[in-house]
Length: 576
Image (tube, rainbow, N blue to C red; front, side, top):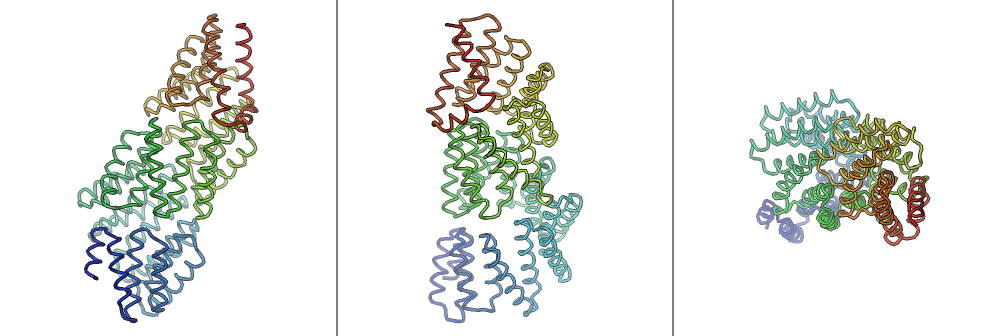
């Protein structure tokens, strides 16, 4: 049975391995039961059944109170479940037992795992203390494997603190050591971990270098699982950079390894990013089906982080891409509830950022501003420094100011967003450009605004995202209208309208028709003016049925919407 369990584990048939280990645990003598439950717990853990794994490790520790391994595995899983007090007690017990046995390898592992958990919950100073102790012991024991993995984890802590030079130095030393002692696969995975840390800080170009080097190493070593992980990382990076076709290609390669191999968690992560890439391309039906598949997989896994990410992705699809703001809010609330329960700070910041974005669109400004303040507060903490979230908060505040006709503030906030985005966060940068352009045009400077809008449109076309192209066209058409170029305004407004109609973005479509109507009015074409204004009016009033009465009433309270409604009414009254 033991050999059958090992064979099943190698084949990744964890259900078969669990079945064998359960039989072993039932038949084992009293002195052997603890070891059997420890093996059973590992199988449950590999199968992502954390509750059953914790139950098995608890039985192992109860049956043999001197089983340091049982307490260590228990501590790790309790930490993943965010039961921090119980995890700390289990770590203490494991550490005491390993010290009593003078087992330096076990003691180092306790310090390493404790440091890793502290790093995840952003207690960086405490994490560094634990990891430095682990590094000191592993060096004295000349355990190269533990030295390398501890250095890599310590490197990620320094990155999180903002000490990038120190982090790079430690990471490079670890990779060199891994190559020297023929444990390069560990170093390769460390490069990938390092790259993800860089992504969270908005340092995308540096992350790309690490991911590409990791892929080269994995392919040279024929390490297929690590190769798939590097491809997933590159897919994620390309998605962040707006290279959607390349992202989907890389993610598809990773999925081709993970899905048939039974790597359920990795499959879940890959599906999530792939759904986002399809969403950004405008393939909304494919995106929604992918998100729903991923949500079900996350529920089967009992993975709260992936559940939160699924709800957030669905919310962004509904609220940002399809302008169904009210429908997005319950998903955002659920995502925030989950992220708060597990202490996922970056998730909480993102949830509140998008809540703020949906709320202001519905005219709920005080609630939106409160959500954005919380997002900014979380993201600006020194030990977190979530650069991308901070940039998006600046942009959202700029959009709010623009909608309330506070043009000076809108320009200032858009510039802050543009500065924070740099050259790496492309979609944010182009949205900041056309938001600033609109603020300039409304302030009486349409020519500088036109140049910015044209730059934004060119950037959007490079990324081939229909939503970004259409929104840049809409902004350009309004800037041209304010600059007394009715023909240019009309042409761009009608291009934008066609894209909005295909994607079902009714709220943006009615505004495109209104700009077309105003452009026709300036040109003296009264027949098309009336036709376009009527279409704008019909789509506008249709939002009440699409969104519901409460959402529609809130929307009507917006300063900019009231102004646009007056424009429609004025045009239609003249045509009678």
